[in-house]
Image 1 (cartoon, rainbow, N blue to C red):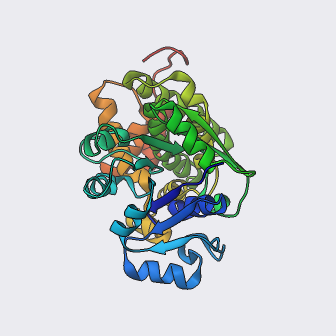
Image 2 (tube, rainbow, N blue to C red):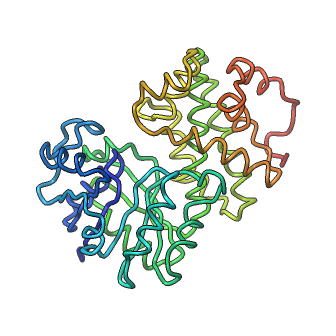
Length: 336
């Protein structure tokens, strides 16, 4: 297997875990941190204590706070920043990349304001000939860093690039599939965070496993309804980046979005919940973007709508649950 030089931009939990995976796969990997002091701490600890505990870095993993130098040395650039900062990073990168560079991202979400998917932003900011791909799937950063088995999908309109990236990430404990449905992969990764907040709220209010299962099943229906309208493929939502990621994020407390929802269901404020989590809760901003996108395309997404109203219209979670349960009876599989 050929080796590549990766610059991983974003030293949060997910960026760090992917950088560790690439370094363990014998790729020349540099993890870029936005702040110099953070890079120095990571180098000193040789672990991301804040986000991943004391899981040690691979010996070969490099740490840097110099974006220009990190990009210059790389052949592949992996963006792993919160979605609200994605365009800014792309704009900066566009001034640094050369024709030899290839770009991919593992960020999940939509752009606030425009409600655009991340590949749309990348297409606007990078030269047309730049190979682009997204990597997504049901993966918690800590388990990837620990080397526990997992699987993802790499999607690109360029089949050969998707395969190249999948080969780079593939290992004995990490399986990578390929695909070309960027819309479905990205939408699944965004909407699942909103639905995880809903599942967390339900659990925080003391509802049971029946409720969570129903939310997941109807959540897939919402995700698929919007996705098909936007041009995604049906099967994508039944795979790793749709149902797989949704089940994971709704069911396990490693999910920040789920924990955020639990706190709200227990009566805590959004600020109190965020203060407890101490990391970006992607679903909070994404809820507004997905709700607005659904409204724009006249798509019925009742769970998403109730999460939006709880977050942005101060609707009491109990009232949101009541509204969902009292909706008119309709066929399960009919279009709204």
